[in-house]
Length: 286
Ligand code: NAD
Image 1 (cartoon, protein in one colour):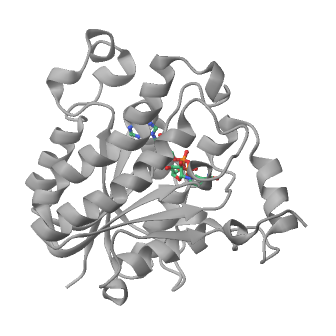
Image 2 (cartoon, rainbow, N blue to C red; image 1 turned 180 degrees about the vertical axis):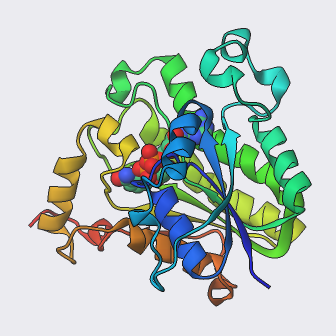
């Protein structure tokens, strides 16, 4: 029987979430995605108008089908958490049931269960500011959108995940090495995400036989990465210095996610897997 995946954090065809969806679809999984509410309309319209058709092509020539797109804002756990200004914001008012709890309820109502949960989202409003210039509000917002969002997603989806299921998030080496430019508390948020991967692996493993891993990905020119402002430099740096001197493709991260979600990885949990052409292993630039 085919597996069903819910991938949170897909709003165009440039990011890791899209590539992971494709690799999972190529491996036979049914694809559900969670799309950030403010980006939902344009994503659905583009999908419907065929704007992504070229990037929907799978290795066998067929097109990836997204069975359903769910609106999602992963900084809100339930309707009581949503402040008035968001409720009445016209980018949100057109959609409903987009808090984490409601999204999980909707998926349960529509499909009953899932096998694979992917968290491919992050947001840090002050990401361009050095940590020393980051406000408390900006720091906490980065942690809320980029770290707690994962705790919340797993907490709410775990009850509908089949035993043997797998959960994956995306992290970045700025959590453990100094990457000037990855500011606003985003380096802190990734460190939290990585630590939580271990604790959640224990809790989800014992309670639901679900595996929890994170992929530390190399640089990709996604929408989110372009907003940080140093992505071209990071890509050039990696090509110049990594053991494998090639540009990283999103598909290479997608394929690793598909492996981690498969029975081939049945004993891997609580792990951080680098998919970065080996850059993490270097001690100096050469
Ligand atoms: P992306 O822009 O494709 O994905 C980020 C997504 O997060 C977007 O679709 C955005 O709409 C969504 N999002 C933001 N706030 C949200 C919220 N509150 N609720 C729901 N969705 C929200 O960019 P990406 O670079 O592919 O990012 C995916 C993951 O990969 C992130 O965790 C990112 O930190 C990680 N990552 C990226 C790189 C890179 O170089 N691009 C490197 C390592 C790790």
